[in-house]
Image 1 (tube, rainbow, N blue to C red):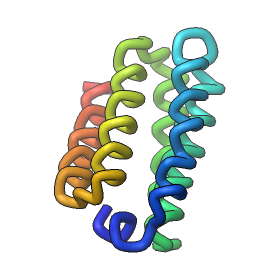
Image 2: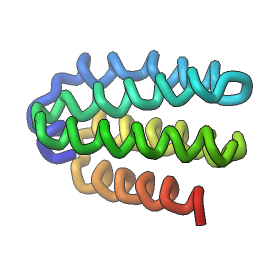
Image 3: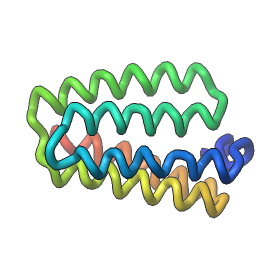
Image 4: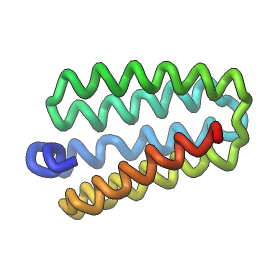
Length: 117
């Protein structure tokens, strides 16, 4: 998150907001589409760090997670939490608060891990 705060322009961060809108539009009725939008959001966010290795690793993890979500037919409420987490992370980045954005990213990862416990 620190690299994103240091490198990304405000306009680049704001450009991610429509992806959150797409997630909101699909979370209740089209889980596969939601997962595509969520993946696109996460990769687009990571691209702002310009860390290609991290992008590759996280993209692979998302693909594995996506399969698990589809297999277990995860409930809508936890997926709505993903949207809330993304909104909070973007708000922190727009405020240039790398520490808070990092803490929120960690919370997001913990929330996702909690989906299959």
